[in-house]
Image (cartoon, helix red, strand yellow):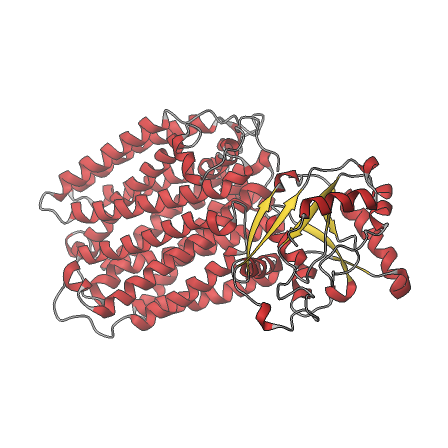
Amino acid sequence: MSQPATAPLAKSGSQYRLLRERRFLPFFLTQFFGAFNDNVYKNALIIMIAFHATSLSTLSSGTLVNLCAGLFILPFFLFSATAGQLADKYDKARIIRYVKGFEIGIMAVGAIGFMQQDLVLLVGALFMMGVHSTMFGPVKYSILPQHLRLEELVGGNGLVEMGTFTAILIGTVLGGVLIAQQNSAVLVSIAVIAIACAGYLTSRGVPSAPPAAPDLKINWNPFTETWANLQFTRKIRTVFLSVLGISWFWFYGATLLAQFPNYCKDVLGGNEHVATVMLTTFSIGVGAGSLWCERLSGKKVEIGLVPFGSIGLTLFALDLFFASPSAAPAHQIGAAEFMAHAANWRILFDLLMIGLFGGFYIVPLYALIQTRAERSHQSRVIAGNNILNALFMVVSALMAIVLLHAGLSIPHIFLVTALLNAIVAIYIYSLVPEFLMRFLVWLLMHSIYRLDTSGTENIPEKGAAVLVCNHVSFVDALIITAACRRPVRFVMDHNIFRIPVLNFIFRTGKTIPIASAREDARLLEKAYDDIANALRDGDLVCMFPEGRITDTGEMYPFKSGITRIIERTPVPVVPLALRGLWGSFFSRRGGKAMSNAANLSPFKKISLVAGNGVAPAKVTPEAMQGLVLALRGDFK
């Protein structure tokens, strides 16, 4: 996807440098204060309900807590379609400022509700905060691709998720501490209004983000527009299934988070401070996982982290069920006494890991939507995502209420959620094998090898091109896949294509099997036709012109196939060189590959180097071999 003209050239350094730049920092602070205020208000309200429900309503605390959770996210379902249209039609920075001004008014209503202990006003303000978050949601994720470059998106999304959950952490702590004080109503009221004002002030510094579709005619009917949004989101299969994956994450997270206060009180025997410790631990995990994504993904959209995240979400939710005590302590305990019991550290560790793997799961999915959705409809796609998120969270609240009324305990709700997560994950990954393929590639790159890249910016971000590379091992294609931001279609010897396990990866990546004319002339001609079609579609095609894996460590002469491909479909050719793979487990050094366990050394340093693209008129087998050899040098 092409980058906006307003995005500056990339600089070296980590994602944290974005926090020093005006194109990111004011927005980051604005969304931070919004999430902070949400959680100060929500946590104060939910803890007050959990521990003082009888003075507010005749309903049980469990029912009230889940109803509040449902009411907060109901506006996402009702108004997201309208919010997405507004974000595509108008300057996103201006929308942010209007939304933050609206927040000040909402918090004034909430403050009156706290002062008067009026449940109607309190719940009404909670609903309006949901409206506020609904309007902010499409802007939050669609503004990032306008101000950040492609290589900054994962880091930027990681910072946003980290900021959001840090805000949840601090807001959770502050809300829990303030509501436990003797003059809690006054303290909570002052805090939420002050934070709303701070959010408005930082929003004044957000740079302009011109509309993607200024001529868009607003459809004010939320129901027809919601349906239209969902239909459009379904057009790009991978994007739609990513949206479903995100929505499932919010179902999972909402189910667990809504139970924490009553889980703390009824199962663990803890007071308000223990509930705060639990939510804080979870938030630290999500923040750490979100930030770690940039390092684990190599600054590109690495969807291989998504299956990794879902595995952790299932395993640690299961362990949370098994770690939960069968009976609460005879008396209510505080944070210090809770932490003094070793068994409770296991519960906190489970919460930390659920948060950590949640970060691995969610950040790549948001980045994938931002990079693969059409720019002119990006806000509406994100609005469609928010609609489904809201629907899933409403169902989550209803499911929790039904299960509680059916007699299930809160730990059993954790168990049900963990098992459902495993089923949903298997279903989604069966529909989109690309996720599992990328996961296997990611595992290879983070266990057996340690990959460095150089010059990969020479690989075009869009449009057709042919990549040519030396052939050293059976996993060369996987290494190139790991290094490239774009999907790559490989031309591969049909015998390697059929290797078990690797065949799944190759088929998922739409690899083109090829044979010599002597082996299978029909397959050879079909391969050339498939290559031409792929290039006409604007794909990246990678081939190994040696036609075989080296058994000496030296390069064999490049064959003439590259000339035939370029004569039929003239496109640029980018030379690549793999370095450091000779002598590894998957190479033929010392005999048959994958037969000498001594060569299976973990974290072996390898590298991929890319040179400048070569114009079609200058492409010959000899010229390309010389370029690849120069890039490889003596480091085999």
